[in-house]
Length: 492
Image (cartoon, rainbow, N blue to C red; front, side):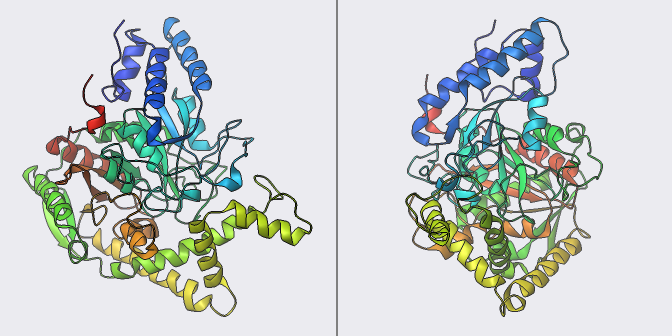
């Protein structure tokens, strides 16, 4: 029996093969992950851990392997799940005090499909409260720390899920992306993060923040592993009215092709004022790799990108104010004590249950939707959103994928932007247009900053062209050859 030293060396495909050959056991994999999670608890990547549940699942897989059964695609894959996705019988908080005691009676479709495919979930990861944040400092359960340097943020809001993979606690994880919440932490933590086309993965069981923007997607150590996880999750779900019935391509087969002749679009608006010079150099070097692989580099324009931040924060906050109205202390979750009237109970429950960033966004959204202001703000934002989507359609007439920075800077320090919400919101400037247009995008590491912190390059695809996007990313990943890891993981 082989000894397992690190989960990072365990690709999903190889793990399944080694389990089938009984070279390793799922139980041993699981124990390595649990031990690592406990050793790195200071990163605060998890809100709830499920060691007994995971070991029971691992034992089931080991029994199947011993019996010679055909193992499913994700057999033995150690996973973590962002704590805004529900799992039956396992506490789900969405990073909020208002749900600190919530035990869901059902499981999200994406998680259900992963478990049916043999994945083992070892816990629920820390996140910004209701996925609202760009640094993972807005959780009621404390900030998450970046494993590359614990004085820095991991990115938000899916920071815990990104850290779980970057710190080699799990082989993959799930996050949700409303304005870049998978891609930005993937960039800050040096892992692969994939946001799919809106409707490609069911949102059933995902606690809503912005319903027209939210998507579930994977973090992984490689593009191949991300493709493997997506292959299992993708596809229509009758429980989600926004789920697409479009055919699911063979994402793993798509990785085998090259990128000769692929047209890579470079939007001039994404490389100007405000972009850190080290990020610019790293992303431009990645684009040069594409040229060396035989791709054609095409300059394009996304002319309305300057309006993306205000449009996003009008639409996202408006939808958040509506979605979060249900958390009132009556239906489920936290309820303020010793209240004397119904109104007082509502007011105090929401005041004590929500954090500052969530309250800020509820107030902004409620104002934008209020009588007399709807047409001036929310209605106008929806019209500009249509223009942004048209910009992408025009761009994809000239190119096959678009290459951009992921964030304007490398990771920043904990507390550096907490007193300046606008500066924090600008961290999403290169990612939010993707959500507004509903197209897919993937982030992979392109290098390190002079401070030794990861930088990621973002590739954007057309609607439901995940296969082409993954092929481009896989080729670029091989060409870049990023193999650095956080210093806390070095040594015996």
